[in-house]
Image (cartoon, rainbow, N blue to C red):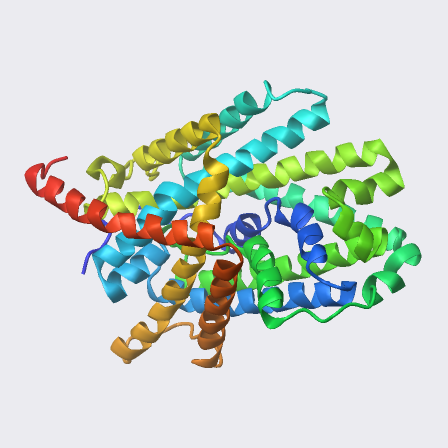
Amino acid sequence: MLTEPANAYARRLNTWDAAMIVIGGVIGAGIFLTPSTVARHTSSGAELLILWAIGGGLTLAGVLCYAELGARRPQAGGIYVYLREAFGLMPAFLFGWTMALINYPGSVAAVATMFAEYLCSALGLDGPAFVKPVAVGAIVFIVGINLFGIRAGAWLQNVFTVLKLLAIVLLVITGLVLAHEHLGVALIGQPATPASPWAFAGALLPVLFSYGGFHYLNDLAGEVRNPQRTLPRALGMGMTGVVICYLLANYAYLAGLGHAGLAASDAPAADLLRRLFGERGATVIAVGIACSTFGYCAIAVAGGARVLQTMGADGVFFRAAGRVDPRTRAPQVALAVLGAWAVVLTLSGTFGQLLNYTTVGEWLGHVFGIGTLFWYRKHFIDEPAPYRVPFYPLLPLIFVVTVFGVIVASAIHAPRDAGMSLVIIALGVPVYYGWQRWVRRHPLA
């Protein structure tokens, strides 16, 4: 079995750090924008809240499964490691090819651009000429901080996770103040034909997308103290906090804007605060969204680099990327590679389509990643398991079957994006064999 070098990483993350990574990895820009998309696919506020509750419950089921996987294999690389051990190196490479080389840097580029747009708007820097330089500067800064090690990166993401939580608190308070105007109508909504199961599943996809990112802590599991205890605790606490924040935020949107107003809004967070505080409120929430997106980028860079480093150590990526600096205990080459590629995508503006093309691949990765839990339970019956997912095998089955159904629904709704996602995954097969041949000819590369 392939393993990472012993003691390559230093276990410096405590429970607080780990929980902040879970919260910060999930909460990006989605909760500030996606509720309006979900509202357009629902007929009432009650239906909208049910969707967010279902998405939260489903994600919690997946998180509990990840807690057991992380406790069993507390190594850097997360899903890549589980797939490698259960199914072999090529399936793991296909995940890494799709995520670490496309989705992760694409996400960083997209969210860094969003950070720059909101920050420039808040500072009154009008015009697209400012956005790309600010986005690139943010990526370079984040990579630079992470080069000094996980403690420096953890300090950065802790600060910005607290700031994004304060932005959500402001949203909720604003919604409660405005609650007397719209809440009754918001929850009842207008009479409408009930959505078909396929339409309901399709509406669940953006909800699940907003709940995505909980896997970043598993990518960083090699740097968590007492991981068998800390990982399950941090995943459970962090994701429970996210679900509560999301339900309260959606309640606030419905209370302040009404269901119809939420569905009609392109920027619900700004519209909500504008109702109570005027343009100053919209500026404040723009700063809050900028903090939230910046914090997400910090975690995505750190997590994605660990996947690249593990791939490099396994010989399916440049071996230099597999090295961990002995002084800082950071994967400096992997960080530089991921950051440089994210900068290229930012400057080229191609990240949006890449993300659309890899969303299906990301959730397929979650399906197969959690599917490895059945393999571990079968092949390691006598292995000590400090944490076991409750209600096994029901919870992992619910997650796998439901998420796969949502993937199918999204493929029916957007066959081009789903098809391109499968094409990108399939292209990884010849790349894998070509890389293996190249490594045999250049063993020291």
